[in-house]
Image 1 (spheres, rainbow, N blue to C red):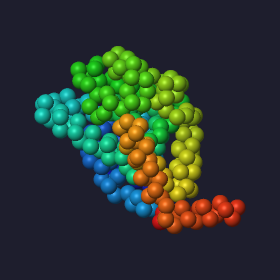
Image 2: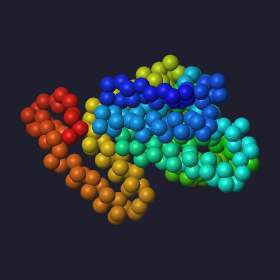
Image 3: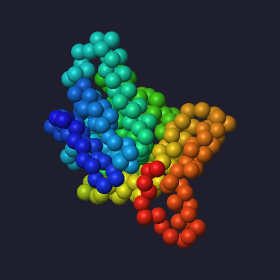
Image 4: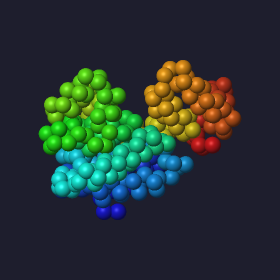
Length: 258
C-alpha cells in the first residue's frame, strides 16, 4: 500500500498513516487503504491495534482540502459517508484500538482519533474541528462524537469557534487519557497494547461491545446487554483456565482466545 503501513508485533498491530509530506491528510486513497487494512486484520490473532501517523508533526492534519474544495452536494455526501463508514468500522472493531496522536489532530484527524477506544498524545499534539472556518461542518462524526466524549457545551464551543486546543487542555477535558513526550509516545502506546493483549481476548472484546452498545441505550436495556455478554464468556477455555489458575494461586501463562 502507498499511504498506510501495517506492522504486526506479537499479539498487537500498528497501523500508520504514511503521508507525512501532506501532514497525513485524509484523501480518498488514504481512506480506501485504511479500510482495506482494517478489513485484513486477523482478529483471532491480533488483540489490540495502535493507530498513528508518520513523523513527529502530525497524526492527521485533517481531510484533504484540495480534494474537497470542488465537491458538489452529492459528492460531499458521498465523501462524508466514506469517512463515516470507515470511522464507524474502527469504532466497532472487535478489538481495542488505541490512537497514538503525534502532533496535529485537526478536523478529520480529531474525528479519526475519536473513533478509537483510547487516545494518548504527544506534548506537541493539537486538537480541533476547524471546519466552520472553511464553510462546512465536521463531516466524519465530529459533531456527534465530540459531544459524547467531552462536555456537550465545550464541544459546541470548540466547533462553533473553530478553536484549537493543545495537549494539556485535551487531557483536562477528557479528550485524551494521557500526554507523553514525543519520543515516549509509541513506547507508551505499545506498552498499553501489550497489556491489553495479555488479558483474555474474548472478555476484552465483550467489554468493548458492552460499553459501546450500552452507551447508546437507557440503563435498563444496557444492563441486559451486559448480562448477555457476561454470560457469553462462560464455558470458554480462557474463562475456565483463568478461574482455575486463580483458585490454584497461579498465573495464566497465555490466553488462547478460545
